[in-house]
Image (cartoon, rainbow, N blue to C red):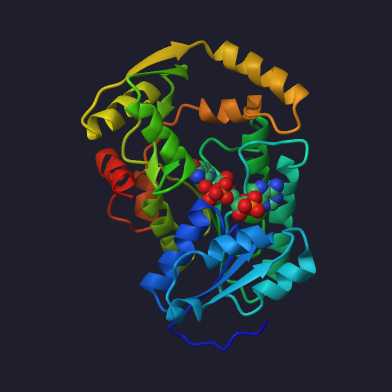
Length: 311
Ligand SMILES: NC(=O)c1ccc[n+]([C@@H]2O[C@H](COP(=O)([O-])OP(=O)(O)OC[C@H]3O[C@@H](n4cnc5c(N)ncnc54)[C@H](OP(=O)(O)O)[C@@H]3O)[C@@H](O)[C@H]2O)c1
């Protein structure tokens, strides 16, 4: 798929483009720049999600949607041909009997690294999870960490952005936060666990800067404030002019429940690895990442919740 090159326009290869951050990034790039986007997805259903983005005909003219399997090297090489920047947004929080961490993370990154090293792509950005490391005892964080290592070892300069809970208009995590904050009373496993939510618009801004600056290396990026899960729910409720009471449940009950359902069900509602990621204490200084990416600041929690409520 050769692309006519124009020095002022970048050509983006975005894998996992139908996800929450993918759709946001695709729309943002086509709205705020003259860049071209090749949105890569893995099913017709996912392609429809891109088709329903509500783009203008002019924006659609700069968009191509390609459906492939992320471990299909030949298909991905064809999709990457002519692209200058790649953003890999493929990932899962919950492993199931039909969706393994290794396939979604390590194998997709192996294919992408190989393809980019032999293509026109000059920079890759990978979204990972805060706390990921190949040595983690948590299966999800270990798999994400191993995937990071694969991309960081590629010849193509790669920026790994490790982020915690992302809050953006219309996504599942944000709807859950608003829904719980609206209730007068709710239950949470270990409500003292630390959250440092980052606004989705700050994440896409960081992705664009990482590519523009060709940043090579891993960065931990999080929101401007670390606070307990209980405080986050209460602050969110306050933004809605209400109050909420958060009652704690022992984490051991959550792990016991997750352990049982993941043994019995092909697609359990909760797994132990997922619970471990959600319970991770997020408390980092985002200043080094902001400095490296030449970003001036982050969206405050109240402003983020305002965006979510306005949606
Ligand atoms: N959102 C957050 O709070 C957050 C926090 C930290 C890190 N991240 C990372 O940021 C990236 C993008 O996040 P997001 O919120 O946009 O995620 P998302 O909405 O869940 O989208 C994930 C993407 O990965 C694809 N995918 C899911 N399971 C797959 C599998 N087994 N094999 C191949 N592809 C699979 C999905 O395709 P289908 O629709 O076809 O399943 C979708 O395109 C992910 O890698 C995630 O780990 C997100």
